[in-house]
Length: 281
Ligand SMILES: [Zn+2]
Image 1 (tube, rainbow, N blue to C red):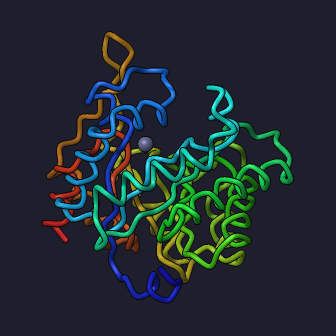
Image 2: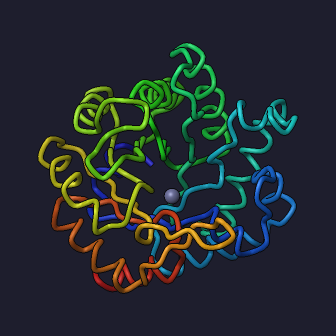
Image 3: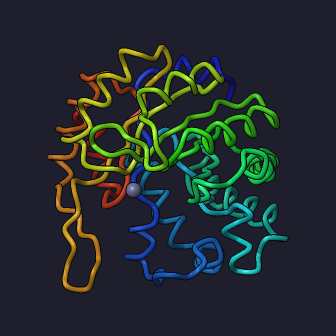
């Protein structure tokens, strides 16, 4: 997809959660997600087919942690290119040609890493994703500006594909590695991001103020991909998201009014939430 095509999309429906649904489908906690997905391809194929049927126009390939620092923990660092390629191929098989496939990258999770190191990490994955044939990139659940800058620069060095950047923030818009999304977002726009916003973090009912300010300060589209409400922790220590699809969709409509145009769900959401979202839009 070209940057012009991305700009022309208008209101866009993304997918919902991946990890929590794979766990429901049997993925154990603590395993290497990439290996499990490749050993149980039916789970991701079924989930992403459901997202496409529910109305997702962009579906994220399950490459979230298919970067060198994570794969190396499982002794798979050398197979990074092959793993990204096979994961993207699964998403393409699931959603077909009418839905865009985003190559997904995320935080390395440490605030102290050097820009040079991060750039190297993200460049390798961005290159692998481009070779795998993604339509665009999404850099999501980011915790700091510097790591997001490094990932964005990596994407822009290896291709001309559109790049979406989204942070996980506190409900008052602070980044976990310091600073605020209000300062970070315009810098990313200035650096060539094609959309900026928030994912995970909280429910749609708590994201309105941040979305409103972002929409006012940016000329590029604002992404809102919240959780199904705030989680409660059950007796086993699992996060349980309680907001129902209809309530979630109502909250998403408010975020659209606040200025978000790229809309989806994060933790606790599933294809029913995306269908409800499509219906309210
Ligand atoms: Zn999430």
